[in-house]
Amino acid sequence: MMTQKVRMAIAGLGFGAEFIPIYQAHPDAELVAVCQRTETAVTEVANHFRIPGRYTSYDEMLQDPEIDAVHINTPIPNHAEHTVSALRAGKHVACTVPMATTLDECREIVAAVRESGRKYMMMETVVYSREFLHVRDLVENGTIGRVQFLRGAHYQEMAGWPGYWEGLPPMHYATHAVSPVLSLAGAQAESVVCIGSGRIAPALAEKYGSPFAVESALLTLRHSDVGAEIARSLFETAHEYVESFTVFGDRASFEWEQTQGSGHVLHTGEVPKVIDVPDFAHRLPPEIAPFTTRGVYDDENEHLSFAQGSGHGGSHPHLAHEFVRSIVEDRPPAIDEITAANWTSVGICAHTSAMNGGARVPIPDYEEQLEQRRSGN
Image (cartoon, rainbow, N blue to C red; front, side):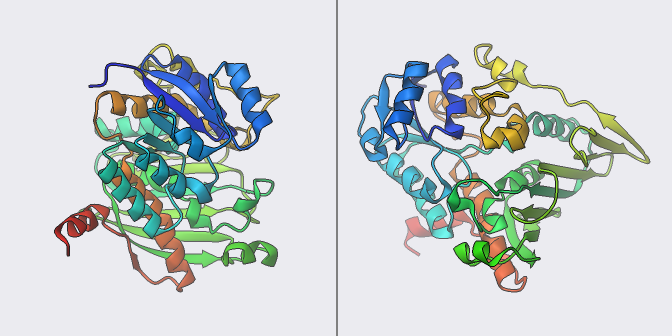
């Protein structure tokens, strides 16, 4: 078990800035450096939070021997490259979603984690939201009963976001819908069938060669008789922002609220009732518990993920705590490299299916592939 504090660095200070005060307050962590490409931006943030290390070069930051772990919040196309380079530099890695953009990149990260001996955690917000934590309790205490079917959906209009988002295939950013479904099922995805529906403007479609406004997928799960459905949209589909999941059980079913503020519903027989979802700050060290309900961004200084995502359900301190404690306790984090690769690959393979008329696409078994690689087969 690690005895000294985990010396953290954060790369990317848009959304990433939200984690600065959490790591500064965490009893087992110390925030020693931040990295941003623009010197004025990194200086302003570092001065405001009194952070000693300031970098505009990610590669230069990785050479700093005072850094134990890096929390990556850089653009999606950089996630795999930045993750692998940090692992090879001997740093533990936490990375915002998705893990990568291709199956080969997922394989490379899984291999780099095993070769480096360092921890990797994908920082998926939904599975640490108060809604998810509450429903997981309902599954574990028997309220839901036997899980019969699961559904995840994420509808979001991405107009106005940074340019690399424009025209992104809907399923390439699907982990917010995939993760709660697979977590509650307690299984990995095995295969996917997906259809693409509707069309986005040609100027958007040409960016990634993806024409679809909506992608909708059906999953089979390994070693499970439960099925799951995932739906995703990013552009030109009129709907209130929502990251949601629904669980059907033989005793009760949890249904995400249909419109924001209408309330989540628990169905028990023929009597549905609106339920209150508690906060879970009591599961955190008291130093960071307040961050389930507040953060860096406020009404006068909003990040788009907060304006549209309602603060990610109080998940940020839970994520930071799980990552830090996995290092201190020398154990795999809850969302380790195999889990992250499976969740991310669902979306990659789903889009492949949609582009091939709904053909069934198997999802790689990354643990099995590692064993084959080790045995030379």
